[in-house]
Image (cartoon, rainbow, N blue to C red; front, side):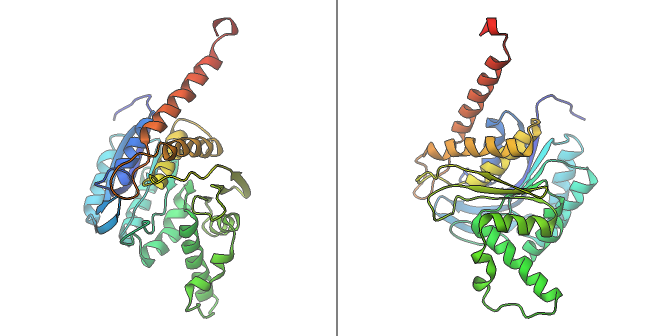
Length: 304
């Protein structure tokens, strides 16, 4: 068994050949945050900055072998979970969380990309709600994803009560709920902490709402008009996981991650013909500034 002081973070997600999101983006973020990154691939995608063309899931046995191989040798201090395209994969991952008593599990419920093929279909989403979310430390949907999750929860409640499920899913109350209301509804239903990200808000701000242990926290930020935001959700969840691995509280990890990813979006890299990748180097620069500040504060007054 490998033992090291460096915090170790495992990404369980899909592969993005364009390098901005998925395990490629996760590993870049984890490294930039000063942690050791590992990855188990749930599926392969054919995608670029213009959209997702196709998704192929890995076989169940191979996903299980990947997870067993890495975790039995290198116990992660935190886990980030991204794209899951098979219902069976959800249960395999939850079994591994239980088997190895994994902690600091951040689930980014990647349901559909901005453009292209949908990642997670209804059965996958139901399994995530029933099994994965309750096993997670934090779930990080954006507003459209949170609305989809809420609709699925409301549908399930209607069926359980013997009531008709609306044939017009877009007209369910989910579309009328605020981000904070959705965070609370999902958190209470799944018994987990939820961060609803406000980057898709129409009000020009990027305000995130977190439901944690019965309390609501608001994380305000500026929305940046940039053409390079590919991988934002992956980076945020990986950054939160990395900061938890380093011993930060959940609220502090979210605050740090939000600042780092905001800087990465502001980097506005010009990569590809479409929505390019965020600037992962900006996260590294923010991490160095943060560490330099800590080092200065820890010095004796006469040494400053």
